[in-house]
Image 1 (cartoon, helix red, strand yellow):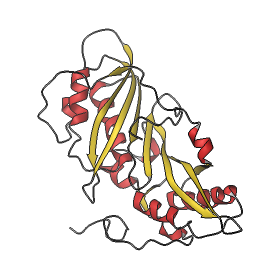
Image 2 (tube, rainbow, N blue to C red; image 1 turned 180 degrees about the vertical axis):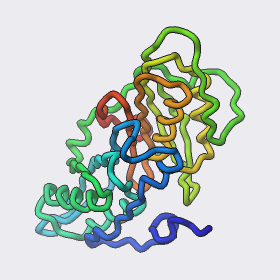
Image 3 (cartoon, rainbow, N blue to C red; image 1 turned 180 degrees about the horizontal axis):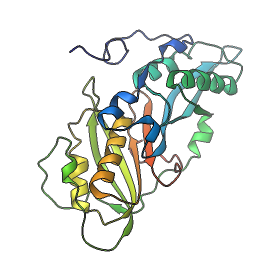
Image 4 (cartoon, rainbow, N blue to C red; image 1 turned 135 degrees about the vertical axis):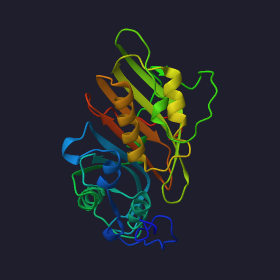
Length: 275
C-alpha cells in the first residue's frame, strides 16, 4: 500500500510561503480512525474539543511593521475533519509578509479558513504576548501515577492491561506525564501529559500506568490517541463518568490538546510545565 498522506505536506520537504495562503491547510477525515475504533459520527460516546496553541504567529500592520502574537484555536470533535499539523504551521507562516488592519482581521481570516478546512465551526482567539503571559499555568491536582514502583515490559498499545479493583464507586482525578506516541507518518515522538477524571468502579492505578506506557510505540495522531484512551477505559472499566484530556508538547510552534468527556465541559486551557 502507498502512503495515505502522499498528497499532504506531512513527511515531505515543503517550501515555506510567506504570503497569506489558505490553500495550505490540509484536512484529514476523522472518520477513517473512528471507523477502526468502531465509532459512528452520529453516535459519538463523548463530546469535546481539540485546543491548539499557536506560538509562532506574525503579520504586518498597514504600515509594514511586524506584529507578533499567539493564538488559541478550538476545533469541535464533531467537525468532519481534523487539520494536519504541518499544514497548519505552513498556513500560519504564510501570514508573515501579509498586511492586515489589526488582529481582529487576522482572527476572522483564521476562523473562516480553519472552519472551511475542518468542515465545522472553529473558534480562534488571537492574543497579544502580554495577554498570553497573564494566562495561568496548570497546577497538579489529583493523584500522580508516575511514582508507582512497577516493572513494565509492554510498549505496544494494549487495552487488556486495564483493570478495576473491588470496592465502592469512586471519583478520582489521575494524571501521568509518561504518555508518548508516534506520528503515524514520520514516526517522530509525541509527548504528553494525560489527565483522567472518572466516577465508577475503582481503576487500578498500576494497570492504568502500564496501559498509558503501552502507547510508547503506537502510531496515531494526537486526537486519535486521546479518543482511543477514552474508548479503552470506557470498554474495559465501564466508568459512569469519564473525561480524558491530553496535553501534548509543542512541535513546529504548535501544541495540540484534545479533550473528550461524557459528562463535563471543556476545562480552562491551562498549559502544563512542558508546554
